[in-house]
Length: 229
Image (cartoon, rainbow, N blue to C red; front, side):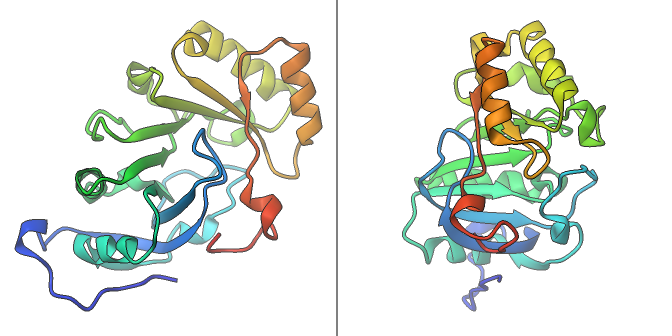
């Protein structure tokens, strides 16, 4: 569901700027190092990738256009200090950059979930970047912009969705070769219902990996295919 404010746009918010939004909702953050915090999610519409494990295919095309003020009003209607911009792929729409800056200016803790295929250079430095690195079995193994490795620091998180033994070995090699373990939080997430959580946990332990196991918490709190959570 998308909440739309009826208030006129403020001149200070560049009223011509708008985004195609799939949904805005208030829930528990299920991923990243901010997992567990009450969070407002802004899901943009549109994605150029077709990952095998995608659980938000409805965001490929569905959505409606909202001004930035309407989006900010929807966020402000919820009692949260954390905001997550996700998709789809938010960086396909340039106004996402303006939105993240406005949210930071208003004192929100802002995170961006991005496919890793788009350069994050213009993302406000105050935003926590959660950058996907697509594994071989993702179906999009070439979809990573190496320029995003420049953001490897303690405030950036790199996520690998693990679909198989091959994916695990590949992720370990990639993260080690790029020194991600030394610089950033590296997240290994089991592809839901493709590999067992215990299997991945034991792989991390037996390989003496420095990765952090990440489960999609929201899928264990609510039925896995529930929208708006």
